[in-house]
Picture (cartoon, one colour):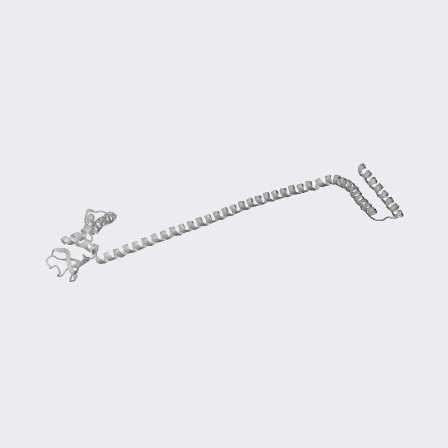
Amino acid sequence: MAVKLRLRRMGRKKLPVWGVVAADSRKPRDGRFIEELGRYEPLAEPAVVDLNVERIQYWLSKGAQPSHTVRNLLSREGVLLEHHLRRKGASEEEIAEAVRKHREHRYAKLNEHVKETAAARRRRVLEEERARVAEEEAEAAKRRAEEDARAKKEAEEAKRKAAEERAAAAEEARRQQEAANEAQVAEDKEQSGEMEVAEAGDQVETAEPEVAEPEDSAAQPETAEAEAPEDAGEARASDEVETSDEVENAPVDDATAETDAEAANEAGEDLTDGEADESKA
């Protein structure tokens, strides 16, 4: 009996699942089989291959021949490479390392041509959307941090400028106050100087009459003394004229005449004495 490793159809309509079996080569595809060796789901992305490697190695060692599709599956999974190395007498470590590298290489090539399913596409789109949202959130957080830092820096700059402006205003006010104080001091000095000059002038004006005052006081009595005799003489002269007129016009007794003559003589003597005093002065 020739044993063949081949696929047996399972599953349902339009959703096949294939079983890897060891069967008599004379039996139909879906007929009786000797042993089931694994499963193959080609519609999954990527395709699912589940094999019983130990039993497959047993049947291969007994001379079982795989079909074309099963040979491809066994080659991709490294089963045929392992069988070949065992026949050559390689160690288990060398076999495991060679199979691992072979599987990585074959699956890398296979993934380049894998057809993406709807579910895988949805998962990919969701992952991309999550990544995009995360990136946008990170970018937004970064922008917010930069804006906060910029606002903080601007606030600090504005605070510093305000402090500088206040300091400049205070310095300007201080300078203005100092200028005003200096101007006030200068004005006070000028006023005090003017007051001193005025006081000095008043003192000079006050001192000048005091010096001339004795001469005026000495001259005034002399003038008064000189004017007094003149007034007295004029008064006496007018009295004499009136007396003479009265004497001429009125009848006078001898005694009265003598009395008047004596009075006239006395007035004349007084006048003469006043004129003499005036001439002496």
